[in-house]
Length: 224
Image (cartoon, rainbow, N blue to C red; front, top):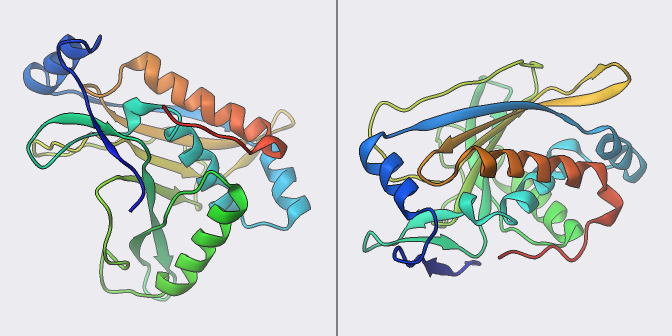
């Protein structure tokens, strides 16, 4: 399993009061929705004859792995920290009965390696229906990502009805569309406020946007 867990020193962490406030007092989660300009990404995909989903998934995961606020979790002893790297957990749709399962793939900074890995995992596990978790052995350092390719939504909101120690973001994107000469992708980010404030959520979305604008420059990504 890739990724090392780093403990956070709560006595030195600048967001310690904010984490305590939103995790223990006002248990708050929120959604941010945005349209991401993916014109350059779509042209890149066409030139390289690539599939859209694993290409976009790379852009999302590269940005997530650039921002430790979206790699936060608790260890087995309840200590707060962040992973050096998270892997994608994503949904696959079963056309024959209109259900879905989710699978996971290893993350790699190298786009070609990541792309081939995701295609291979979809081929191997993507037809396993009748279960939510189609690929066993999901690691602890996973980030959920799903695609709604049937709708160019304007907003997406979700909630949970029980308390949860889950701090990773929930990420969804929809059907891309044309407007004012741009190719836009509806994007939704569901965030634990304890882990990330509005600044961090906006930075993640803007990082994804920047990555999508420069698909020819996907090398040398580093994480904190």
